[in-house]
Image 1: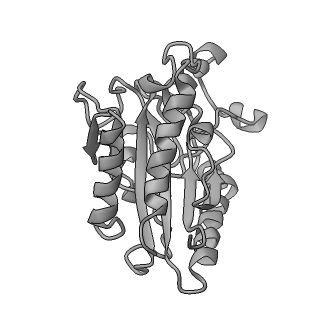
Image 2 (image 1 turned 45 degrees about the vertical axis):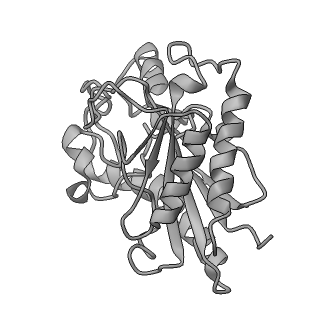
Length: 255
């Protein structure tokens, strides 16, 4: 077997909000707990279990309510900023204030404290994997609500079990089709780029480095957790095994 070449990127699994960041958030504790339940890709750091194909993983250590590393850093470049949910959120999913008085200096601090170090870690990890001429595949690991959240652009209530997100430059059609086939064979309904599209690629390599490939795997939360309580379902291990099969399919993609 060739050396492992997968980099798993897990950006939204954490519920941690450090005390110094909690002080900047407007909702009371009960409201904030509800927002965390809706917005966290709960257990994805466990759902995407290590496989022999994994060379590295980068897990964002704090909640996306502190800073969302899947957004573009500048609001002018980020479509979700129009909904108050750019890299630094000022609104909750239902449009209520999350940060009421975000200054430019505070936003810059959050980007420098959380966003840039995380992206540098991803960039460095990719660079290490392609240093000897090999390719690598970034697997962007997510889950999503079974019901559209108010802030989400895709409000179609008919949501698949699995969403495969692609980039038209960095996601080979063969890789996309193989993941769809594996998920379908496991009995899941699958859509490509719906309800979510794209896959994370470091800016340094974006549309410059063909050895860097990327794909997003999104798992519907109803498959593995109780979305009202946040608890795992008894079938969690079974779903984790199916997700591992998808990750392995990415790992088998020719380098």
